[in-house]
Amino acid sequence: MAAVATSEARRAELVELFNTVSSCTACSLSETRTKVVFGSGNADAELMFVGEAPGFHEDQQGLPFVGAAGKLLESLLGEIGLSREDVFIGNVLKCRPPGNRDPQADEIEACQSHLFRQIELIQPRVVATLGNFATKLLSGSPTGITRVHGCEQSVRLGNSEVLLYPIYHPAAALYTRAMLSVLEEDFARLPQLLGREPAPTTSETAPVVPVATPVATEYETQLDLF
Image 1 (cartoon, rainbow, N blue to C red):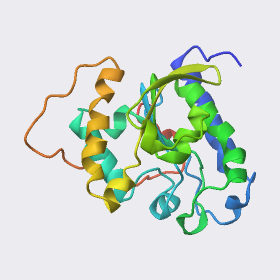
Image 2: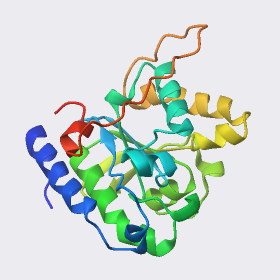
Image 3: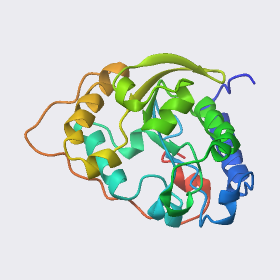
């Protein structure tokens, strides 16, 4: 499929994809989910984050990374001069696995085409994979995140050539505080990968941006620049 030429056309196709995914029954997770978590953010983002799967809070709100890991993600973005409004955030799976268990192979297979289409429509310059599942899927390699975090590689995803940048999932720092410095170091390279000047360093901790609760179910409310 040829790349979509205009921002307006890409946004329209993202809304169409959202409507399709919202009624997806391709795997058994459709029977246990509360809401489909399609993803949200800037439809013209140069930077896209891909996590593993929605958790409890995401399943309730229909938005990605709205729990503790999401707040840490926002704080890390703030340290490099970015916010949620500057990026697009999604997951490998669009529905929460029961009990937050790991995604299963058949679930990833059923859902991966939605993610690849998102990347094709958003056309990010950098795709930062958060954790093992996203990294292995998008890199096409079984190598785990411990060995490849912080090491970018150029990959072709569908019709899109992107810079893939594996990073530990923010949840790792919630359970192992020593991981925070590793995450901060890997995030600090993102401005360079995006071709931007690094954000000025300060002695103050970047503030955590409050997560807004959606006020409508239409996907347009999840795209900041609609």
